[in-house]
Length: 571
Image (tube, rainbow, N blue to C red; front, side, top):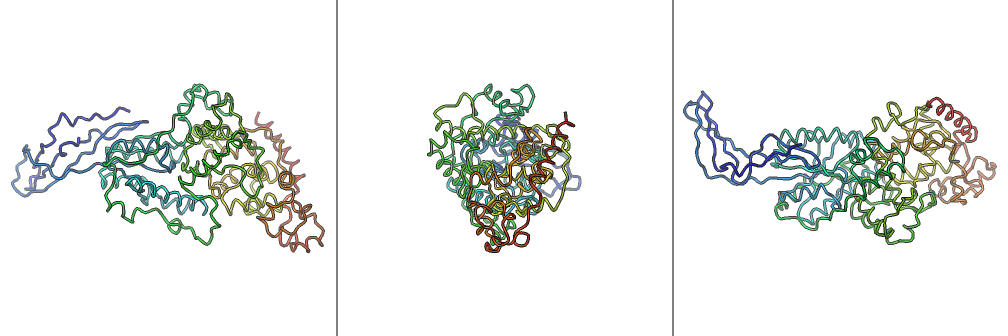
């Protein structure tokens, strides 16, 4: 989009026009912008860098007097200069390091207002569990603290973006607005609305890519307009593009023009929300294992990057899904909220590796970032990506919804201790290992319960700290063998898969205390224990802990037939 030309130098900005159009004896005096500020012309613009519209500063006076319809030019002494403001809109990308959109806002050297919009509708209606609300609240406090150290602050405003921003544009005299590109459908619709409103108010909009390694639009263009649907396909495209853009330095100070007054800095109406504001009852929370925020994210990243041999030899399938302490980095929540830049992680990994591998191993940490990129790219270009119907890449499988089965799975009451322990951990802590996600997703869909993958996706969306729209939908399609992965005959056993890595069942004993006194040989199949053993353990199956909701072997065989038929029908 063409930039709006700045032509203030061609104007005599100290000249003001008096017009008296009223026949009733009231005339209006319009004062043109003071010297040094150009009037807006034609509204704002946008692109990856956008237009360059400027706000007209006008003061209107009313004076009583004759009814002449005339215009008089007069030269006046300009009044106090009205300062211009730049907004940086934080959504994801809740960090200072490697934040190109924030840097674009700072470069203007105008008063900077970093904004986070808290939409009351999301607080009330969104599928967001208490752990993720807490993570967000901690993240906003951390971001606010970091901004205050630079002489600014985070302005948390309540309301819908389309209602909030027009008010802020006027109240703050906003000239420019920046934000990070978001490829999710909801975000795209929202951003189109705000871009339109910005243009109407003459506010220049600048968007920068920062939540993904690459610009997804560039990836598609490089692949001749086609979306790469496999890891290898995406890797081939990325080789043509080259390395991701370099990391942008974290601002260590702000230009004086960007800083805010002490009065504005201390205004409590813009403070980050409390848990109560977010509808969270603190007594409902378990101890916090993964504090939110950029500070914690960078600390956690460096903690793992120091373990160089571990990083270099990392293979996701060889990590343990049911270890009592995470066997992976748990950086996913920080990447989801943008507390950690994926490019920062990418280049730190290259430093540890020593160079970029000629071929990226899918199981490596670099491979995990590449899978993330793949799901973001496919999600950005596939209509109805988060549902089966109308989704061009998703196999149409006749799942059979059963609310009782879904509820038993969701709340850890299937009667399979390994599956139930995973779901209980998820609800308590907001995180479970990647392979644990595989096990429970397979169990809910093609493995045992034959439930729609969309229902499982929605439960994960509520409970996971790292619930990320593109990754969540993509992984559920993968694990249900609806897209990306097609070896549907590979089914996770709800008994033996967990037993391989935790033969004593310590994980089950931790999350299902009712079963902790069962002997090792019954801990994964307590329904097989004699009644005397159950009584000795203080847990009667069918009373204190449920019997299995299905016969795994029978369900597996029946579902394999169903999957075969669905695949045959979809040829």
